[in-house]
Image (cartoon, rainbow, N blue to C red; front, top):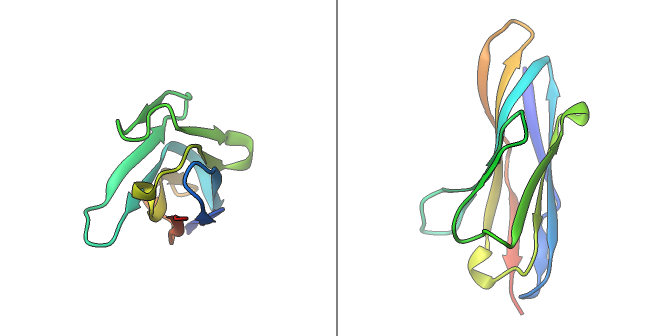
Length: 120
């Protein structure tokens, strides 16, 4: 069994910054791609950024130049540094990871989500 736990969300003023963390735990053999999605009320879930096991990254156009995704493979943790936040960034942010467990089963894992609210 594997688990993803996010942390770091909260309320921030426009122009502010937040850093989200996503820690994977459990019977993990390896972690492949890790990513962050977000879902605002009444909107579809959208991919914000992802990072491969080798460190290659990709971003949604709406966050390029403001958000940075990174990972610490030794800690099984992924981060999302969010700068110059805008009200339209308000959403629940969810972590996602493709994980191979000790039984060699490939699991697409999701965290429970963390709320990010950008408002003055």
